Each structure stands twice: as C-alpha cells, then as structure tokens.
Image 1 (cartoon, rainbow, N blue to C red):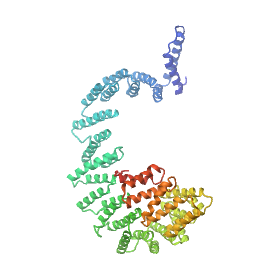
Image 2 (image 1 turned 120 degrees about the horizontal axis):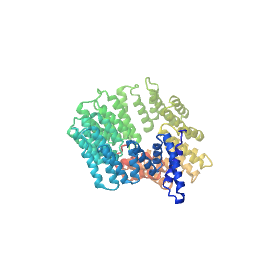
Image 3 (image 1 turned 180 degrees about the vertical axis):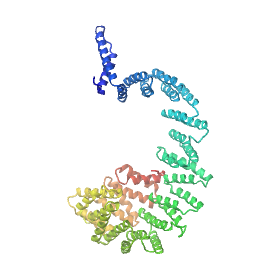
Image 4 (image 1 turned 90 degrees about the vertical axis):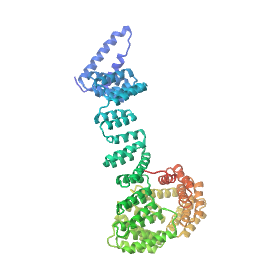
Length: 635
C-alpha cells in the first residue's frame, strides 16, 4: 500500500468519521451505519499507521482553519497516546480554553501539575483558567502560590516571570523579579527586567528608575537603554521621566560623565538644544576640553533649524581663541549658520546682511584666500549676489574660487552653480546654461548633478520652451534628492495645469518671462508684465499665480502690508488652485516670524495639514505647528 496520502484526503476521511460517529440511525438502518463506521475506522487505522505524524499535521490544520472542536479531539488523543507529551499540551490547552470546556481543561492542567510536582508554568495556567470562568479568587490563589514557591535560582525566577508575562500579568512579573533580586542577594540583578516590566505596565516613572539603577551597576548598558526607550510606544513619557530623574542625579553628582551624557542625549531627542548645549558647555569648562562635543550639538541644532542655539554653540568654541584646534572649523560653520538663518527666515534686516558680510571678509582676510577659506568665500559670494544684489562682486568671488588650487571638486561645482545663477541674473543665458551643463556632466549620479539639471529645466521654462522643460522635469520627478524631486513635480504640474486650460501659450510665456525678471531683481518690469497679462487676458487662470508672485516680491522688500491682502485673497477665492497651499504657508510664516502672531500662524499651518493634505508642504507645516504648540518633537 502506498504511504503517500494527500492531507486533504485524510481530512475528508476524518470529517466523514466525525460525521458518522455522531450519526443516530433508525433501528432498521443501524446495522448499515455500524458497518460503515467499522469500514471507516479500519480505513483510518490503515492510513494513520501508514503515515506517522499525520494526526498532528491534521490537528494543526484544523486549528489554523478555526475548526477548534475537531482540533481539540485530535490533540486530546495525541496527548494521551504519547504518554502526555508536552508538545501537545499547549495546543490542547488553547483549544479547550477557546471552547470554554473548563472542566476538561482543569483535569488536563491538574495532571501536568501532579506530573511535574507543581511546576510554576502549570500552576499559572490553572490560575488563568480560573480567571476565564471567571473565578478571580481561585485565580489569585494559584498566581500567589506560584510566586510563593519560586526557587532561589535564576532559571526558575526567569521561567516564572515569563509564565506570568505570557498572560500579561505584569504586577506578578514585577513581584517575581523583585523577590528574585532578594533571593539571589543582588537587588540590581534583575533591574533591566523590572524596567521592561514597568514599561509594559505603562509606568514610565518606575521603568526609568530601574533603567538608571541598572546603569549604575552596568555602565555598558547605556546604548541598550537608549535603544529600548527609542523603540517603545511610550517614548515621550520615558524621555520626560529620564529628563526629570537624570537632572536630579546630575545636580547631586556633577562629575558623573555618564549621567550628563545620557541627559544630553535626552535633550537632543526632544530637540531641546538649549538644554543639551548647557550641559555640554558646563562639562567642557569643568574638564577643560576643546569644545568638540559642543560643536557637534551646534551642528545638530543647525540641521534642525534651531539657528540661535546653533550660533551660541559655535560662538562658544570660537571664543576659546585661535590657539584652539577647532577655532577655524567653528568660525567657518558659525558664518555659514548665520547665512543659513537669513536664507530660511523673513525677519532679517539690511544691517544683518552687512554685518555678516563684514564678518566674512574679516575671517577670509585673517586666514588668507586659499582652499581653506574657499567655502566661506563661496558663502560670501551667495550673500553678495542673492541678498545684497552685488552681482559683479559675487561673480568675481566665484571665478576666484573656481581657478583656485586645492579646492574640493564638489565645492568647485557648487560654486559653478552659483556663478551660473549670477550670469542668468545679468542676462547671459548661454554662459549660465553652459555652467549648469558642466556640473551636470561632472556630478552625473549625485544630488548636485540633479540640482544642475533642474536649473537647466527651469531656464527652459523661463525662456518659454515648455516642452523641453517638461521633458527634463519628468526625469527629475524621480530624483534621489527629495527637494529636487518636489521642485520638479511642482513646476511640472504648474505647466501642465496652466497650458492644459489654455488655447494659446502667450499668457504662460509672459508669465514665465515675468518670473525670470523677478529672478533678475527687475521687480518693476516683472510687475508691469504681470499687469499686462491681467489687462490683455482678463479672468485668465493665471490670476492667482500672478497675485502670489507679486506677494512674494512684496515680502522680499518687507512690504507686508501689501503682501498680506493678496495672500488672503488667494486663500479665500482660489482655495482649489495650485497656489492656495503656498499662499497659506507664506502667510503663516509672516505671522510667525514678522508679526509674532503665534495663534494665527498655528491656525494657518493647521489649515495646510487639514485642507491641503496632499500638499508637499504638509510635513513642514506639521513640524512648525507642533513647535508653536510646544510639543516635544522626537522623530
């Protein structure tokens, strides 16, 4: 006889067997049923003997299919025939519990308790069974008995705690490890386990207490504690408790580097760079260090857009003097941070620009015009060209950097991009596209190459060559740089949306030419062009785009009284247009940074999140909204 019997065939025979066995025939047909039952039992016996292990496979299959009653009967049979093998105990327990056959299940568990002389696992299983009846008094008796009888061995303690944890009995898990520490005469031995148990209970205060208790005994566990906190669903509460408890410990022990490092880490997770820098500055002074850790935190603050605290960190290192090995590095990054702050905010003044220019010149002159100061020279060129509108000064600096020996290739290409922009501002389109193309070729597979390709695509748009611009933008939509990808998508969607609704390209060509004039700082000419579109093509779909462009110009000139009504009009009357989210965000920035109207800014940022949930600005709007609300942002 072949032993290769299909599991489905076996299941069918078993199903017939279960059906026939429960069948109640009439007296006249009883003998036929008996014969059929005997035949089936014989066939089943042959199958089972020919295929060891099939009953177990079939039982598992029934269980997975939700046929718990059939699975329970097979597991019961397997358990008994295998001399009560433990591998059948657990699935049998689950089946009987699911079927609420409490009496039968109690007999099964009691047998295991007797067989194992009261092993804790089965005592707890019995307690859980009683809890489901429900009989909480008897359940507690079993749980307490298991805890009372635990042996003073690590394995026994851990097994008991794991048995409680399987049923989420976290109070008993805590009690087990607390008793276990006393039994092994080392109360810190199970401190990490206690911390995890309290975390599972949602008790952040005690979880942190035991984390720090563990850290005292096992300093090498610091990274493990950090990882555990970061991956827990109650991360914010744990960080709050860490900050509170660590601050108290640091106040009592100012020389504990580990506590100070961990507290600083907590501040950084909460984006509280002021607190992190305060700790590191104090430690740096106390130990007479060179400011390296302060510098690292300043860089983090700058990356997160906390420019004021970043500047404070850089200045601390610079003030250590020129003899400090980090002086040149810190001063370079300080100037860069101040420039970035200006580029990302609306509330800078002409004095801010001139003061920064003078500081750049002083730094460059103090340290010679070499490859070491080339980055600062490039930053100064951008400041000259884009903010102070000294295009010739910016071009001269860029050419000096490009021809300089020892300049890193990436910096040289970044400088070429700025130079290309300056030539575009002067109207030298050919020189501009040539420089963009050089960078594209040199940086083919890098984000810098994608930036160069985007600038060429934008230049095609400015010239009114929309088809070629679209061809380039389609490729850039999948750019590795999220910023370039978003810019490409935005410009591409704008071209498609406006050209698709128009029968002639003239209004779009006029609009793109006006945007080029804006880029070239010829704002009055740009306004005239925008006004001509409105006059020649009344009611055109570009009306809201024109209003937004003009509002941007007014913001650039700090004329917020003229910008705000235009932005309000777009939000009110062009809510479904492409510029509505941009206008809302810009108006929020004005209220936040210039008017200091926190409530209005929050309202506008929230509007982007709720009303324009597909906008590319949603992530930044959510971040700014939460910061204004006072949230601790850890992600």
